[in-house]
Figure 1 (cartoon, rainbow, N blue to C red):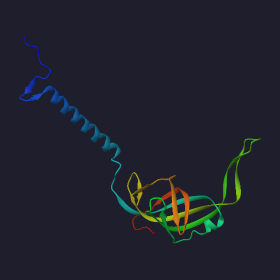
Figure 2 (figure 1 turned 90 degrees about the vertical axis):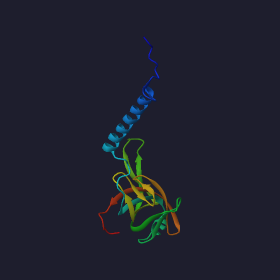
Figure 3 (figure 1 turned 60 degrees about the vertical axis):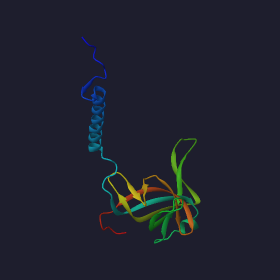
Figure 4 (figure 1 turned 45 degrees about the vertical axis):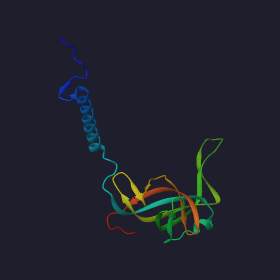
Length: 170
């Protein structure tokens, strides 16, 4: 009786090891297909649609906030890409939560001389079921951006995103 060689040739030049490798690759492809069928690829179908997003510019003086005007073009100061056109500006007194050290109560405390600007911006963006891209850069709520509006640069955070239907107003 012969001892079977572990690299024994079954079908001419194909060994058991070769068949095992092929089966592992096929199983990996099946698992990946099942995963992406359920969860999606993350790409989705790209659709360019008008959006309005809101940014918060915190702790600026009134003159800096007032310099932002409806219709001004907005650019990213760091990366240089277009971020849209100002739709509206709301200037409010800056306030933050403050804790009373004796009672532990929290209340909003206003800071005289400091203001927050809430700026709504319109632009066409690439919209999928998973993300929104503006000029090839992903847009997320909470994302920090240095925006150039007119001659001033502002540090801001995205606070809201509204996706308009096809042919929506800009």
